[in-house]
Amino acid sequence: MLIDSHCHFDDRRFDQDRSDAWQRAHEAGVVAQVIPAVTAADWERVKQTCSSYSGLYPAYGLHPMFWNEHSDSDLQRLRSWIERENPVAVGECGLDFYIDNPNKKRQLELFEAQLDIATEYNLPLIIHARHAVEEVINRLRRYQGLTGVLHSYSGSLRQAERLIDMGFLLSFGGPLTYPNATRLQRLVAQLPLESIMLESDSPDQPDSQHRNQRNEPCYLPLILQRMDEIRDETIETIAAHTTENAINLFGISV
Image 1 (cartoon, rainbow, N blue to C red):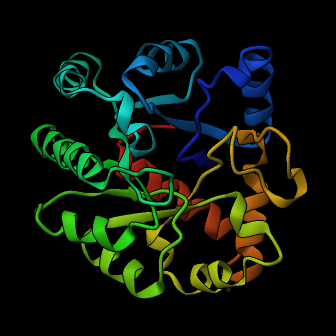
Image 2: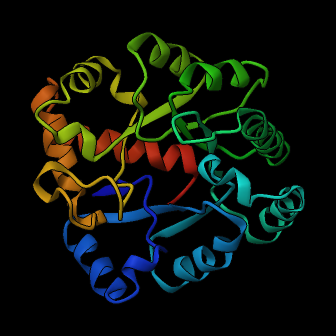
């Protein structure tokens, strides 16, 4: 019984076979998926997708990669959506300083506004941090009591330990399975199991067996298998703990 803690199952690349993909996920033991939105224009599609399939849970937010598409009015609309729709998290939000023309000032404004919203509604965060983990940590330090997950985590062990001490979890997906991902594998081997979740990030970030293909949540057991290979626990123990971690963070039932 696995939970995909980060899956863009609303993505239009699933439009032709979404029902089949959902069935494949269930047959693979993926009993729940958390579906984060990336722009305000996606919120309705995320809502409809989650209402159409059992075990799908929405999160609403404004992704940093699309900072130029977000308006201040979207932040006010986000409050309305949260009040009306009761999502399991605020996100996907965060910082991405890797993209061309990142406009760090605007990204920080949007991120901090969503930290305020998460605080206001007592919701966990789904955070994207690429080439910006330290800046994310610095911002989170200003907010007491927040929790959440840094998805597809790629920071250092020391940064991971600081985030865990602050109450945050880390999730891992396809990149963990590549032979050259030795630094990431060493990191995952050292983290406490209570701080880890599984994710597909589908339809992006496929595992090594499905490179250059559309990713699917049904491939989540391959992430679990690779995690088992680099850690001391049994695969059953890892599955049970990562599932429990997602249930506890997002307040979902399976």
